[in-house]
Length: 269
Length: 308
Image (tube, rainbow over the protein chains, first blue to last red):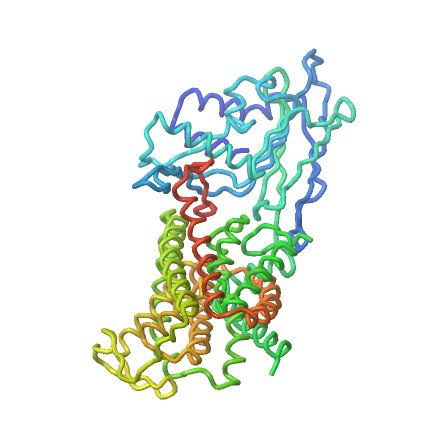
């Protein structure tokens, strides 16, 4: 939480309002908070094997109330955010050049999650006002996409790249935003199932759960999730990156052997 | 059945890969070519990242040429000295190609260069082959005899310095065109993932006047070694050789090639060349269409690196 707040602060570069907000956040847990969140995942490791075609991860938990809890008419709102390792990506746009379509303009986003799924109990804009959503990155369009200082894309065009980036990620199944998919089993028990597609990137993930009511954040919880290749897939990948020369020689040997074997098996003379 | 590719990092249908490997293998057996120029675009069009497609096809070409080399070796139809000279150029060419491949990938122009090269080379070679095969068909129909190779026949290539004698091919030519030819093929192999057999064979026959029976074995050996070098260099510098993908393609490919080779014996040479020319032209046109028509999706994303 602290790290998140700090990095948020850095990005805002000393905005007085942000500072006040962050301060409020830091103080929140000690200022007589009434609700707490207990969250767990069905698995803390997703293993990618040769027959991997995707997986489901169940996020479940309980809203813990204590004596200080004030009964209020508004319902509890939950947001579960599954976020993959941060990457630097370049979004390119094709343009016509000398009669053919080539990549022309490009925008590089410095730190964006390689995977991002947001599940909310109801649509994000009903849960909280925009500043709160942006601060906690609830909802795809509230995601901060930092760009380089020397970006050559004019201001008026930046939104196009932003939107295209989000659209492509959604199309490839790596980003998703679903509302109304958090199931309440009782007043305080909840559960949601997050599907991880077959092309899910490997790495360290965080699963962040936010509890809100009446547009205000009550509690949050962060769990870690690891998506890793195992067995043969992991071995192959490690070999290819850490022992590249050996991997190359193995590939050649395999190819020559297969070719030779075929030549022998199908020998006609 | 879905199979997860560890380097491409996506699952694909294994039977689709077998099928593609088999179909391309059939054509490669039919025409006596490596088939890389068909397989790479097929992989790209079916959603495998271009970098992985190109690098992996170099490995698949090693397998398909290896089985051919074994057969020609047994019949002693390989000119080793000529192959070595071609290889000197080939290794230099593939090193430059792999380096350029890496640079282009970081600039985001790899796909463009692959497409442009395919259009240029395939339409040129396809066009030349088409004209040649139609002419030879017309000649055969009119009953004229093919001009036989005369010992004293020379072209501009034979005027170059650094001459060397190649006994098995009964040649005495300069090494410059040989090394350059090897380098061009090696370069194209690394950048485009093609063995270059369909360019090497006509170049050796028409430019250097190597006897036809020696050409195929020698060209296959050169392709085998050049593509092995390209596989190695791609493994080391771009890490994009997917061994699972390569193996699946190989198995389909070598089986398909056997059926293709049997079919090929039933067709006449000029008919085969005409069909191959049309095939080469069609692939080239497919790439040209992609470049000329406005794409449905203008944007694309590429991951630069992981942020710690």
